[in-house]
Image 1 (cartoon, one colour):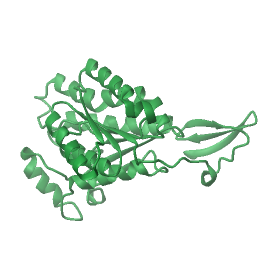
Image 2 (cartoon, helix red, strand yellow):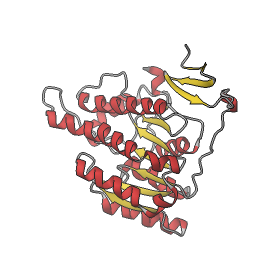
Image 3 (cartoon, helix red, strand yellow):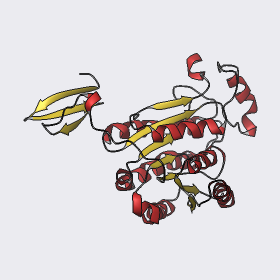
Image 4 (tube, one colour):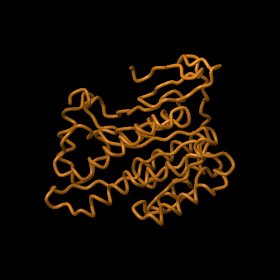
Length: 287
């Protein structure tokens, strides 16, 4: 059977998407080109972005606020930076389009509190969630023999546990806001990166979690991933970063604005789900 096929059961049509059956009434035509669809409405929609005080998350928050979204900017400690993003957006747009929420996503009590803060935020109460962006991440290098088990567990809590819990808990708000989910994953999928087994394995888990949810939540909530390539290198990876750029067909690194643009696209396109958008200058063509 193809990944997307249909069969008749008891007078009702069932559609199979990646092995998951979705039942439709007998009066529904399940031809793909005729399925009913709801276009996302970005202007005024509420978007939660985790880890949005700096770097890629900050660029995305700024872009979405400029596009008319109200952004819940989650941070662990970068409160001042996040407040500056909102102040700068207010100056550009003439109104406040964001709020800062602080929580450590590796601590269960903090995640639980964050969920309640999102649910009870007046804008979410009024219109639900238009989007959720799992961007929070931590990136460090260390040999496999030296990485502490707690470091491995912490990255899994950040990259897998928190996105699982946040998405699961905020399904009603996402459905009410005709929202979708985007997870920032990694181009390390299928590659062996020296000294990064603890990081790449947790990002691979996030990728698979999101793709599976795209199937489980089909017709209710769109779920996609975005995989950045060589963008904003850390100081300690300058040599590795330079070697990567030699393999990139475009021959240059990307910018934070490129990632923000990609996330904006995935949130705003009502047809795309279950995809991984690579923004890597064509790197995947060579490996």
